[in-house]
Amino acid sequence: MMRKNPLTVRGCIRRCWLFSWRAPEAAVRALVPPPMQLVTRGGFAFWNVVVCEMAAMRPAPLPAWVGLGYWHVAYRLHVRVREAHGGDLEGLYFVRSDCDRRLVAGMGNVLTDFRFQTAQIDVSDAGASVAGRIVAAGADAHFGLDRTATPSLAAGSPFADLTEAASFLKYKPRAFSPHAADAVNAVRVIREESAWRSRSIAVVRQEWEFFADREATLELCTEVQPIDYQWNRGDIVRVRP
Image (cartoon, rainbow, N blue to C red):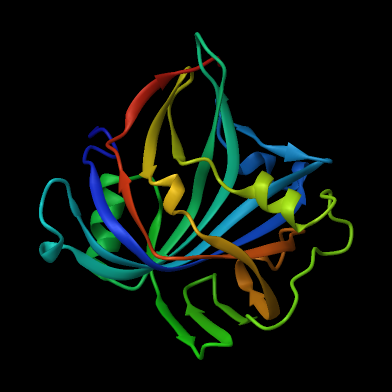
């Protein structure tokens, strides 16, 4: 079997919104294969759903002009692993990805474990507001964002305020997939942390088919400014079973 994530790829995230959801730990535990463990707070596990427009995605070190642009929606869970001879590493585990280009989805399923499906993804930005529509088998979604409204945490949040929630839920730049009982394939994301610009944004309407029966509550939405990214080729990391 071909090793997954064999290439280092580069690109730019042109537009990006991160939707963070909480769910009872027991409701999602079965979705995460060992040796990964859920990152939890107050009995909750956390989803990270990204809706983003990618630009100039290409294998490194090819020039940007040969890269592809596409929309990507991915449903990930915050997880951690314990290194065999070190501390904990945190990152994301991909449960599902949707993409509006068949070529990217097809190659993604060959080269990664990110579970791509093709979808129609439309996002319109009116300045003060953003509207999104996703048409995907089993994962239709609609959302509306308002940049002029004041965002707030959902009732019952395990966080004291938005600042604490945003700090805890800012994902660590890694993606994990299982490799063996005592190993994971770890993809490290390289981003310039000093260039990271984000803010919480109010969600004024939303409907996500994916979460219809998952006991999930939307915690917050974060809007991220354009930033260059590099996804390193996967490394096999030995961990404690």
